[in-house]
Image (cartoon, rainbow over the protein chains, first blue to last red):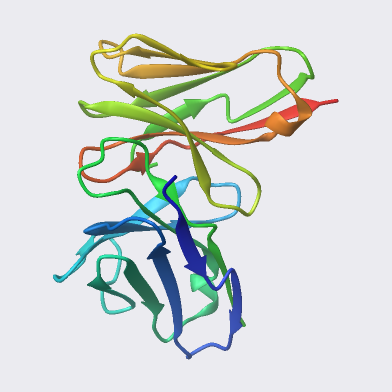
Length: 116
Length: 108
């Protein structure tokens, strides 16, 4: 079945630094991948849609300059949290599904970001 | 939430009982999907029901869809302690928006 690998699973960084999170589709290609953020005991909020070879599409209220998304290949999307602050501490999850598939999405295992 | 509401927000049942979770959504849909999330983990796809379907089964899972009411339900029969998790419904054409989720606790 479709597998999505997300790294790192946990990261602690200092305020003001940047953190990069990778999302890889291991056995399929995806022209689009999706980035979500989830606060404790809350639902997943779609942040942006990552488009291979073009700019990401951000949801309303998400700062594109703060959350940089790069989708340079059909199997890799990265989310960089720039100049991180404690309020950026959250659980970030990516998802994707095979091109031309109408099946459910496959999610990465998530990244727990803690900014101190 | 970006997509809608689910109820109940939390549900606690004894092992062996059935669990029913409901989801309401805001816009027209092509399909609706249910996912499960164990604490601190990613989501696992459970079942997808298309807008022209009214009911779908998969093992101990039964999903219904009422497009006139913009609602869906997920029934887990003969629950097990391992079913303890959060359950989310998601809708969207080219992406996926989630409801608020239901935290299910199955007591052994």
